[in-house]
Length: 178
Image (cartoon, rainbow, N blue to C red; front, side):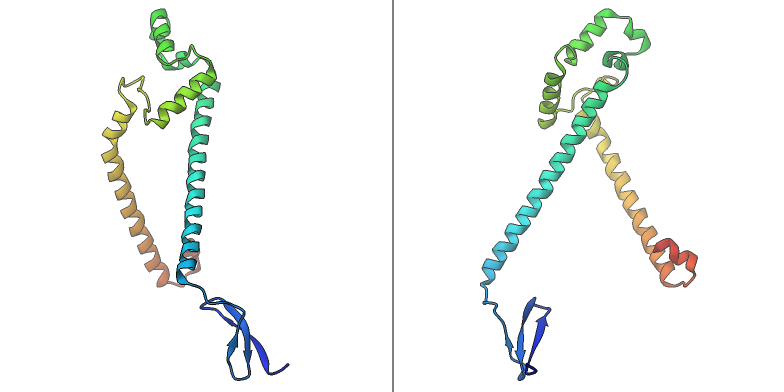
């Protein structure tokens, strides 16, 4: 019929039929705002849980690939840790093998590695003879300082670039920012 037309209310995502007087007739039932709020919060929780799972999966993959790469690298792990002068010292080699658990099966080494990482123990630096956590703690202020400096420079470059592009019609300059 010509006296009815389909309309769409974009603001509230409502589709219905309007009669000739303009009254909208829909099949949509009024919803309690709490019900919609709960559904949105459930969706948010599911989204965040999925992202957290993905983050854990990425970290686990990186840790596992690192472990595999260290063990698959050419040569002996002990030889890679020791200097040329230290490699000939049999007692030192035996102590390093025992300290690092290299005398245990690889799967047991992997489980121990994961267990320490989960507890936040990043081990000891063989070169610096210090806890890796302590080394990170010493370097953290410099890392924050470098990060803030990089953010300031990136923001300044972005603002300058947007000002330049907004005031020019030159195709080369516009092409750099598009």
